[in-house]
Length: 98
Image 1 (cartoon, rainbow, N blue to C red):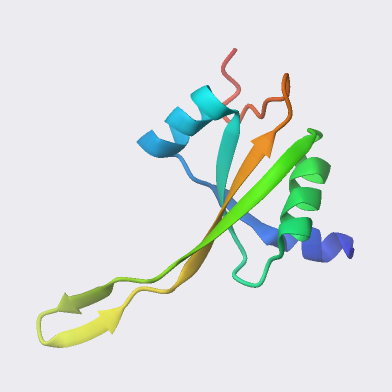
Image 2 (cartoon, rainbow, N blue to C red; image 1 turned 90 degrees about the vertical axis):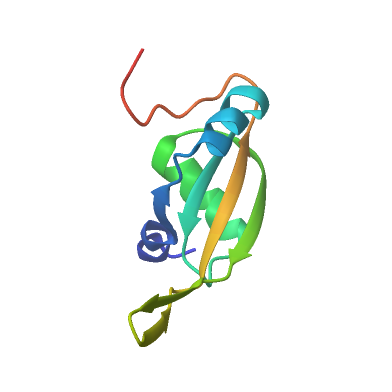
């Protein structure tokens, strides 16, 4: 896989109540990923960037919500998220808190 492509696969971590609970209970981390990213690319990108072992990857396509601003109607963009399960004993520290 192309190194440049792997750097574009992961967009941002998702930090919500649900993702925090999954991280604590199931050793899973949620990411916003490129819409055309495959599970293999996501796994390789996480392993290369953070130096951890990935057990499996689950993905979900999120449909954008319709929004209005007065009479103007619009729609948010569709996006893709990935739930990455790390092997036992592995962890990613985003905030540097020990």
